Length: 202
Image (cartoon, one colour):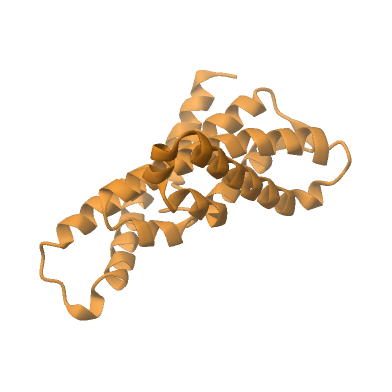
């Protein structure tokens, strides 16, 4: 492990290969929930938590279950099942232990179950930090850190989009492009802006 590798993961996950604006994962929640900043923050915090924890769980499953028994071909379906089960378990625990916290997240926590960005992180970790069925040195820590950074990249995109859309409420917008059409136009422009980070080299 080295600091340069962690820095590379951070810049790549947050800016260069932003999960929403570069990899185009999780667009459904990005468009639907980014109308206001408060729900966008709630969804982003939930995503950061889930991407981090799912990175830990899926790494352990891939390293100690799928690879030893030559079951790598079950990677996608096993990751989906693990993530869905984990999110439902967390939802039940939060509802029982901390009802105010559960009310703060509302519908956003269950929505993560169908958020392809979470699955994308798990698959990306397996592709990047495993070589020929062997975990590279520091693989676990890199995977967990990448889970956090992807969540931060998701939050950055959500906050930018929600800020823009909140200000558009004070503008006269043609009826034909109001709401979702305009949101997709804004997302496209933001994506092109983030393409400028592709010039970074490490």
